[in-house]
Amino acid sequence: MKSLSAASPRRRIACVLFGAAVALSAVDARAAEADYVAAAEKEGQVVVYGDLNALPAIAAGFQAKYPKVKVVSATGDAWQMLTRFLNEKTSGRPVLDVFFLAEDVVTTADNGGNLMAFKPDAAKSFPPAMAPSPRGTFVLGNVGVMLLAWNQDAMGKKPAPKDWTDFSNPPKDWDGIIAVSNPGSSSATFAVFGALYQNYGPDKAAAILHGLKRANAEPTASIGVQNTKVQTGERPLSFFMNTATIATLKAQGTPLEFAVPASGAVAQSNAVAITATAPHPNAAKLFVEYAVGEEGQKLLAKRNLYAARPGLPPPEGLPKLSDIKFMPFDLAKALKERDKIIAWWQRETGFGPK
Image 1 (cartoon, rainbow, N blue to C red):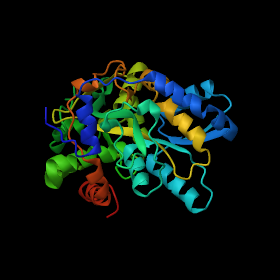
Image 2: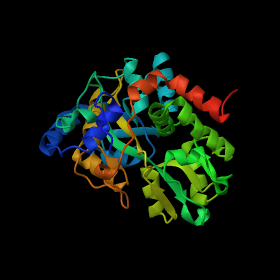
Image 3: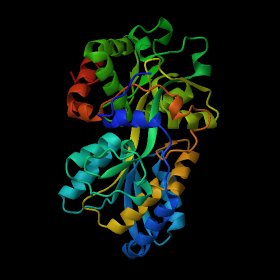
Image 4: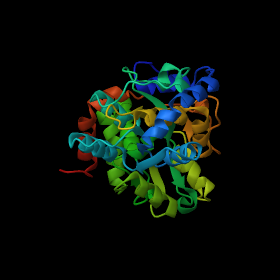
């Protein structure tokens, strides 16, 4: 396994995944939630923009526990959610209280001074990797892992990929069967191509993009469309798939198979943060305490997600995080080069504007 530097958020995540278990205090977390209840109930609601896989379970659990605090939530593409928040803020009518979204988007919001400094008591014992903001404005809510995946029934006897580099010289059997999503709209896709760009360099990573183009891979409008095409067998080979989707589709009976790339999987997490302009700050603090506390994290584990809180089981049928080899990824550096990486992807695949 490669030695991963703790210099970046993504590398710090990898370090803690392979590190020793950390003792966490559920008693402190429950006490902290109790401190905010009265004020939160007076405010009456909390508005959350979040990830489709994670937020519904957290919102439902919170609503059941705190029925006097109405949860108003919206899910969707993380970058679109950020744009929505910024537009609302610019108009002078901010409505958002809490982000539970991809770390790259939350980091971008943080870099713009849009988040409140708040470290929940439920995360007091979290290691630094789970609270990567240098300003103390967000903690991680769950960890996503990007793996190779395919619909075995639809693939038949076609060879399955073993590493990212297999797509550099795709076999003829892969012609017209690959689905790939856009790094400009998907945080997970940006993490994957950003990691390939950083680890292989732009030329060697471009060979993978050229291979996708030669194999007539289909660039889908969203990662959801990509996953559906794999599920139905229309495009049975996914360039990658999030472990949350893999576990969910397998539980639904989809004949999905997966592999950890020989060069390493890519981690892409969701982060939880309160906006600096939150109209319901106490309800927001209560929600965050719940989301990263024992109750909320157990709900995520039951929803086939890798919880950020140590000690909870992995999704059914998937390996423990400590058993997965990860490819290093410097998220902070990638975000500084985001436009460059996306332009590189568009140019080398021919899938974007000329």
